Image (cartoon, rainbow, N blue to C red):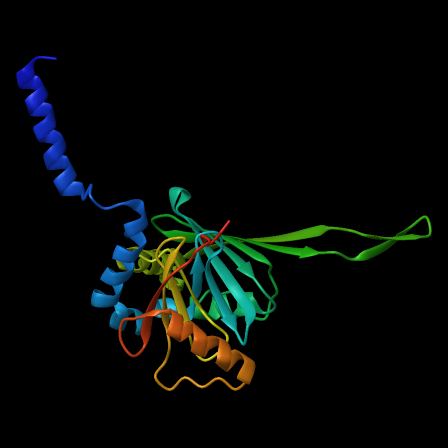
Length: 241
């Protein structure tokens, strides 16, 4: 390669490195994301609709009440589709939330939801496993019941738009996953498989002494950012698979 072209290539690489932060190692990325979130977004996050849910990349948005799963909502962005997976009575909660004009007392296990310019298309599935007697043996049968609906857009709210908006907000904050812990209102927010923040409410109260000792130790181990937020780095990466 002629010397002039070599100099030009080196200049391009230097400029590109400056624009893309080539001095930032993969090990730094999660902490940089954590600190950016802490400095710019913690107040907005704590007031966000996101905290109605837990989120991880595999199961996506999960709504639970009293530690019992109500529903999961999974976006299939490439197909402009949403899949709902329901716990007991979960479909009724989902239907009321988005004003779906279907009997909210009905029981369904799964929803496939799509939209076009004029209407929403819903395919609902219910799986039952009744027992049958065959040649004096009791066996379980697998039966799938389906329901298909087309609903004009004016009659209900759009869950795809709702969860897309939440997902854009999550991505803006640089969050990989987050969850509300059962004890004390603590929130865990992960920014990489090893880097995460914990939020401890100001009025945190933990009833069980064995858990109190654990969380007191956890606070001491963290890097204190303010009275509520602490930074941590795992030795073993988080597995969301």
